[in-house]
Amino acid sequence: MLKGISPILSPELLKIIAEMGHGDELVIADGNFPGSSIGKRCVRLDGHGGAEGMRAIVQLFPLDDFVKAPLAVMEVPAGMFEGDRAPIWAEYEAIGKDDLPQAEFEFMEHEAFMERAKAAYAVVQTGERALYANIILRKGVVRGEAFPKAAPQKQKQSHIQSGMDAKPYLIHCFEIEIMLALCYYYLEMEICTLLALLV
Image (cartoon, rainbow, N blue to C red; front, side):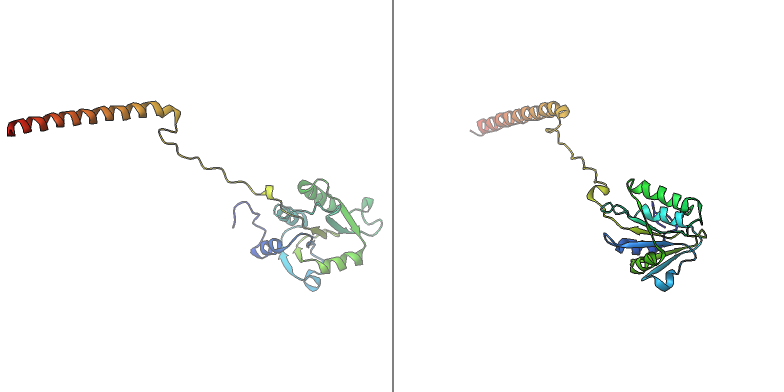
């Protein structure tokens, strides 16, 4: 377990998305997708839906803002769903826009989508049961401002550097100088007295 990271992301999946570079693509596949047979790498996310998996991944995975459509889905047969849109796409769209508001979808013909999935860096095989719930995510870049800056350490000020403590410090030094001068004076007097007795 790690702080701030979804527990559904396995060490294997974290390694994969960390290895991916700008422009690499990741397929989030439904339970019917042939991920193991066509994917270069296939990691299982059984028991979790496509939207749940995408939401957890996108928290760590920047979508590519160098392209118009960093998300791609497979076109559905005409008349299969209202508006020819799979119902789960609305969830995917909301998750994508949370990370990149201008993100758009590319709608791909079945065979073209499958060829692109074969070339993807990896396939995440979820347990999603909805039809046409496969989506391809294109990875963007993590810019420098995404990393929190360390808070500057406060430097300790000496008594002389601190305006509030400078005056008492100087008075204290002056008192020490007076005491040393008195000590030298009395010591000199004692030496003179001893010399007079010896003479």
